[in-house]
Length: 119
Image (cartoon, rainbow, N blue to C red):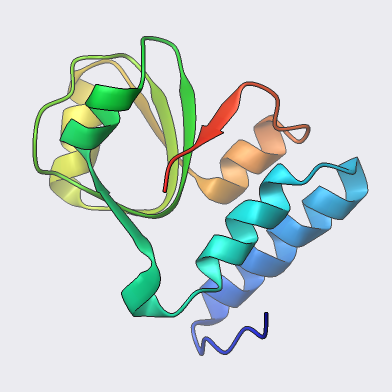
């Protein structure tokens, strides 16, 4: 899939995720990078309420898109996404969770074991 974004930070993120995927011979970071390569109108946007519905305490979640602040979250989870709204970040951290960038998560867990992708 050709990547046509003019966003240099996004281009660097995608290339770095693909590099980590090749280096560790795992497909998870390649899949996340492929989702980020989609057109902007097709990218993932997930509310914290949706995250609460599908995760349990202690889960690690990768979201190849944006996390929005609608809904509530009570679970203490680690969430990595391309972008967070301020409200979403506050709600996640108030619940005891952690917000990371996708690159930080890929560097902490290069093998990708135990990570769920929500899209």
